[in-house]
Length: 319
Image 1 (cartoon, one colour):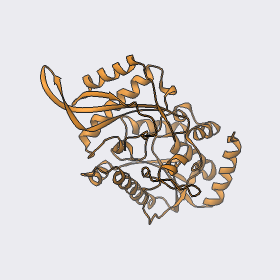
Image 2 (cartoon, helix red, strand yellow):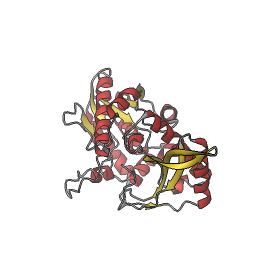
Image 3 (cartoon, one colour):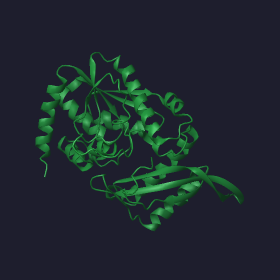
Image 4 (tube, helix red, strand yellow):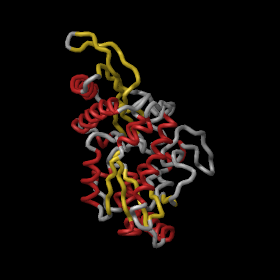
C-alpha cells in the first residue's frame, strides 16, 4: 500500500528541484486531478503558481461558478478565468472525428495558456493533472506500449512545439491514489469526491458536430442526471455519472403532435482504477425520475436510454 504522506513530501521536494525559481501556470478543469495537482504545486512554489480556468463553452452547468467558489475558499494562489467559448466553438465547427476534437481542444488550451502566460512574468512550466489511465489509453506507457485507444488532450492532444516545460506530479497514479493524495493535502470532500470530468469537456459527450445548441441541451440533461443521483444518495457510490447527446433523432409525441427530437444517453459507472469499469445498477425508480425530468424539462429531447456496457469493450466516455 502506498504511503501517501511520503508521496506528498517527496513530490514537493521533486517539484522544487524541477521548477527552481521559475513560475508555473496550472490549468484547472474543475476535476479532482487538476485540483490536487494545483495543491501539490502550490505547496512547492507558493505564490509563483498561477491557475487558469478556461471557459471553453464545453463545461457543465454551473461549472465556472463552482470552480471559482471552491478555489477561492481553499487556495491562496491567483486564479485567472479566461472567456474563450467563441474561439473553441469556432475551431470545433464541422468537426465530427473524436480524436480530432481532442487534439483541437488540447491545442487551443495551450494557445490560451501561451497568451495568458505572456502576462505572467517568468512563467516557464505548465502543470497538468495527467494520471496513469490517461497515459495508458493514449498508448504512452514506455515499458508496455499500448494501442492508442483515444487521445487525452493533456497527452496526445498537446502540440509538438509546446513552449512550456511540463509538470505532471500525478502521472503514475490511479484515480483513487489521487483522491488519497488530496486527503493528505487537506482538500475538502467537495473536491476529493467529485466525479471526473474529461479535459475536452462536453465536446466528447456531444457526439457528431459540436454546436452551442446541442451543448446547451446536453448541459441541462447532464445537470438533471447529477442532481437526481445526489438526491438518491448514490453520488459517492458511483464513480462517474453523466449524460451524452447522440447525433440522431427519433419520432416521439409532444403536446399531442408528432415530434422528431434528440436522444440522451445516461451513463453511470463503478470502478476502482478507471482502467476497467462496470455499469452501475441504478435503481429503476431513479432512472425513471431522470427520464421523466429530462423529457419534460429539456427542450428538444424525447428519448432517454441507459448505457449498460462495461469497460472494456466500451470506454467510460463515448468519444
